[in-house]
Image (tube, rainbow, N blue to C red; front, top):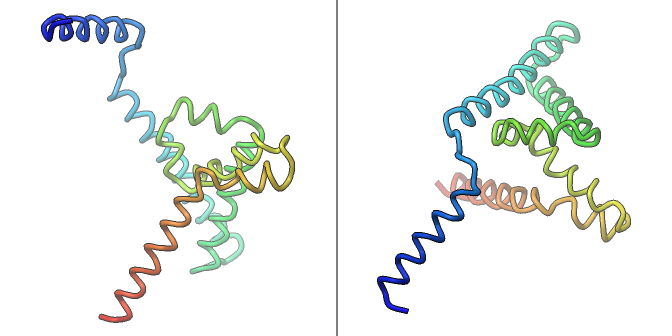
Length: 150
């Protein structure tokens, strides 16, 4: 096969593959991700205002309580199968907030629970979130050491 035939073959193959691939609507996807991620953050801010007004929480207690509630909501929606549908429609907008992190931990645990408590749920729970946790701890330690020595 000559070089010119190979290029022609590659172009035909790419055109064939693209005929099956639906067109991507980047602007619409970005807008949906922004709206859903923003809505999740609005829910968090609403929870913050309500906990501040009703229970007079402030500072770290307020921030921790809002985080725990959002993680619980994300995990509950994952267990009910709702968060997967949100993620399918919202894309990255559902991944970025803290609820997306809860989903990334709970989803593999639910998926592999049939393999047992240790080899299934416990081993697979941090398959997605594990590298994020490791990198976060490493980066935090590195920044702390730099701050200590400067």
